[in-house]
Length: 281
Image 1: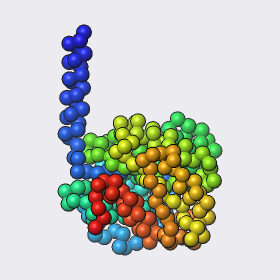
Image 2 (image 1 turned 90 degrees about the horizontal axis):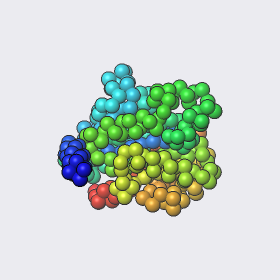
Image 3 (image 1 turned 90 degrees about the vertical axis):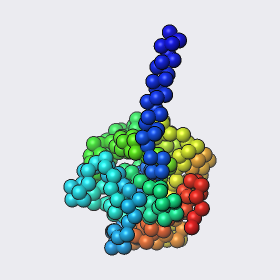
């Protein structure tokens, strides 16, 4: 019996070692999720589509024939980086800033699954269906693009991506639809913990970066939520809050302008770089 168990252990170790060696340890990957500001609300402008370093990649999370992209494949991260017709997102300039500061042999990849208007409950893998029962029709259409389960799609794509590289962090921008929800931090922790478990990740190595809502200095309609977001590190030890102060707001005071997304994305990267052991150039 002991010999049999030892043999099985050796086989498991061998298989896990093969997988580890097949991964490119210099391909840093980041999961992105949330609602409309992570989805990308601002119109993509000409400078956003040019000079994108091929070291910055996006894994398409659904089929986009008009973009010549197929679900589960990597592409140079020319926006849109969420669904086929979404706009500029913090992930755009997060990735660009990373590749500008990381060694030339390091690639960066993002996987973005976000749904405009959704509460964090949509990413609760055990209760999302209950939430969807009361969701508006326009949201159900977007969720349908992910076969009705955005969290499931994020995990599906992440597992596929783990064959290629190493997940180094998780980016979140969500909260407008949970404004003043005192339980938000616990709900985020549930999603974070599920991602770690489902993807076999260690919280010590995979920080969660959460962006603020449009700031009060821009007349943010949901700026009061930032006080709750500020307490996230009390619930998730390896979490970090990204300030939105000074990031220009769209006229609705819910979303950022293209320039606002560029600034916010750079701030995500400026927080992530030291966590990767890299000094900002």
